[in-house]
Structures are given as structure tokens and as C-alpha cells.
Image (tube, rainbow, N blue to C red; front, top):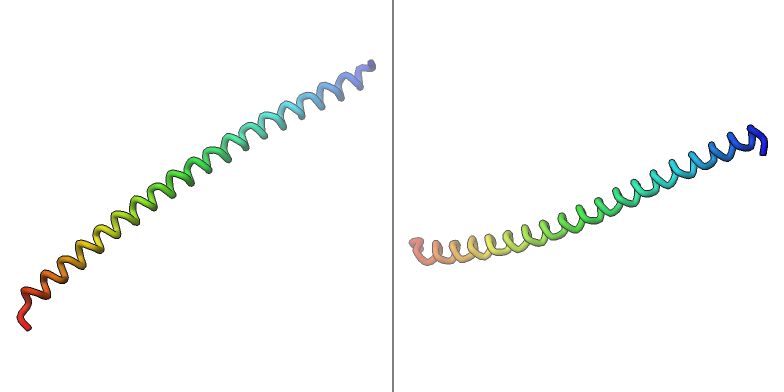
Length: 71
């Protein structure tokens, strides 16, 4: 094998390693985004439930207020 062939193979090997590292980082970041999205979905569900509860309290208070207000 000539020196040029050796250099080219080394360069190709280095490019392959860089590609593999970038691919691994990409997959890790993609998983992190999936995890974050899942947490956001859970947080949104919790906030919806809290909002529903608050709306029920407001409706109850409005009914109580209507009962005690002079007509």
C-alpha cells in the first residue's frame, strides 16, 4: 500500500468516526427532545385538570353568589 493510499484510508476512517459521533449525538438529542415533549404533555394535562377544577370552583361560587344576591 502506498503512502497516499494509507493517508486516504486514515482520512476515510477519521470521517467515519466523526460521522458515528455526530450520529450518536443526534440520537441522544432526539431522545432528549422526546423526553421533554413527554414531560410537557404531562404538565399540560395536569394544568388542564387544575383549570377544570378552578372552573368548577368558580361556577360553584357564582351559584352561591346568585343565591345571596338581592333580586
